[in-house]
Length: 187
Image (cartoon, rainbow, N blue to C red):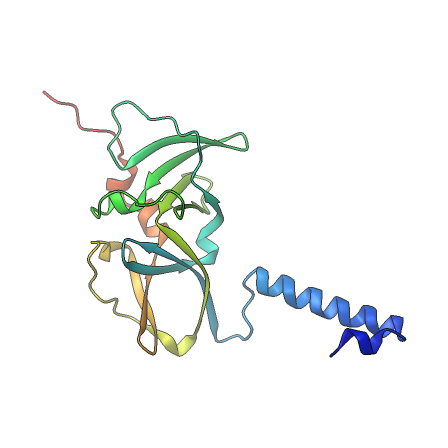
């Protein structure tokens, strides 16, 4: 509907503006258009694309300028950052998975995992925004990838030639190897 056509009908104009605002908020929040739709956040590690549940990501931020290294930590643990007064562990996800360090800092982003117990930010090469899939796009089996992360995958979404492995942030936070970021003491 054209807003110009409603210029002489202020009440109808306000109703249409409210309808559009609600639709824009729903789209911004990733609200599904229908019950059989799944919405996730797409991200890239190297040349591979993944998608994670938007419920598992609290926030997406640029890589913090100030990250304090932790002595004796494994190389994939970038350090600790202060995010609005809360200490946040910053982890290079690609490095943790054995795929080398994250590339360009310009495109790199931090996915803040939605966990109060383990406040963690995962550095990824790029965030690709919301990805919407129909329920019948889901497959139980995730294809093998270059980056070894099969322990953290929960199937994939396939649409035409696109394949999006579903990465579970919660499985990652439960992994003892991930939770043990200190280097082993040398004898």
